[in-house]
Image 1 (cartoon, rainbow, N blue to C red):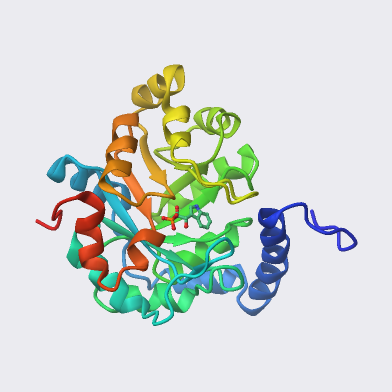
Image 2 (image 1 turned 90 degrees about the vertical axis):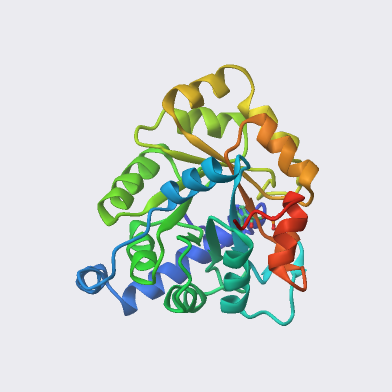
Length: 283
Ligand SMILES: O=P(O)(O)OC[C@@H](O)[C@@H](O)c1c[nH]c2ccccc12
């Protein structure tokens, strides 16, 4: 996979090449056999998909997955005074159905410590581990660190890997959020058995270009029909800032949204949520 002599063609490729090295080192420190032992004592996972569905039924608005995100390669540092546990609690108070926690350190200034700290701080929302998963080992690791769901990016993983990883997720009680960005990826993923939750990323991870009409484009026509037939829940991801944006992706067919920047930048993320939805969604 890795060719040391070449430079990566875009940021996603750079991230994945680095991740490959990082995971090899982490695996050496904690081989799978050790991780599996830790699993037997781990508390049960919480139902991420169920929480999204319940929130949608309760509010009639897309369920919110609020993201604990300090920085990104495209936007730089989003919040200097970054306290992940405080932000998570503020999101929960504001009515988030679930939380997403960035764990990539080098490019997003996230960490598994943040995930663990949020899980141990009494936050009840199910937690998505936002990682660049390239190997099954990372899924076991995320589970041990307190994740209830994990991201699988179609731009990074071949179909067979996604299928295999979904099985591992089921075995571990985790929800898999399978992320796509274009029609080709969507069509690939719709052919994989066991997919229950698809995220449409409005940001191209290669170029950083954000366009929320991408969500609409990928849900039009036959694709939308197939998704409804299969009962798949769709998450609109990235670039959502206003009640109009939320209304737009809801109209396109999403039952959940994944929002980072527009909330994490707010002095008070709880108020940020009511600003984003145009109303209080906490009760
Ligand atoms: O901060 P935004 O524009 O609201 O986006 C959140 C989330 O969708 C974004 O962080 C994201 C979506 N898919 C990813 C994959 C890797 C890293 C990050 C992401």
